[in-house]
Length: 227
Ligand SMILES: Nc1ncnc2c1ncn2[C@@H]1O[C@H](COP(=O)(O)OP(=O)(O)OP(=O)(O)O)[C@@H](O)[C@H]1O
Image 1 (cartoon, rainbow, N blue to C red):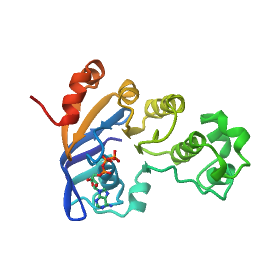
Image 2 (image 1 turned 180 degrees about the horizontal axis):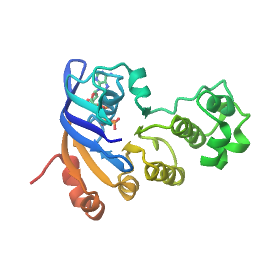
Image 3 (image 1 turned 90 degrees about the horizontal axis):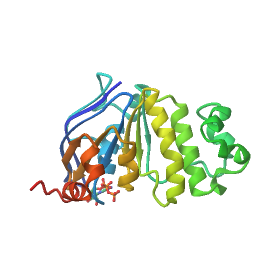
């Protein structure tokens, strides 16, 4: 299913933060959303999953309207959102955290590293292990579209390299992945489509190749300068 946004605007504290964003995260594709701090990336993902309302525009998943629906309904339609901050149930074990949504053996298939940590309290896992746990849980819900918000925050690049192939495989199996990522180069290496958000508006959308090949093009998009 495609995730489609048309002319979406979002406000925070009464101030417009995202303006008239039109984008598609296609089925079976990794779509990356880049942009400087404070550009509105997190806010846009939150509007898609229903954490905050959109003040304007349409959001659809597989042709079904998400706009105006409660979060639970959006999840039933197949949308999953991994928010910033690696929220695990710290006092439950890794196994218990996974069992809330699915079979721990399937999570271990995705991330064999979790096997020897299954009976450890999730709060005691490393940041990288917690992120694997959070990602595995989201994948086990079988999402049609997955929003990922800065999974790599505070993680070593090696761990990020470990997570990205799992995301690629998920997309190859048909999921529409929309990835917000601060490691622009790592994200672009994976991307089928790239968007750049600067000051709340899109400054780039389409083939990631020019951004991959030219730091100057990437910088121009980040600055919102299309001269
Ligand atoms: N809960 C909130 N209340 C009021 N303003 C907010 C709130 N959350 C974010 N903002 C403001 O909205 C703007 C966009 O923030 P947002 O977190 O969406 O950007 P971002 O691109 O995800 O940045 P970062 O990479 O730093 O997370 C910023 O100016 C921020 O200060």
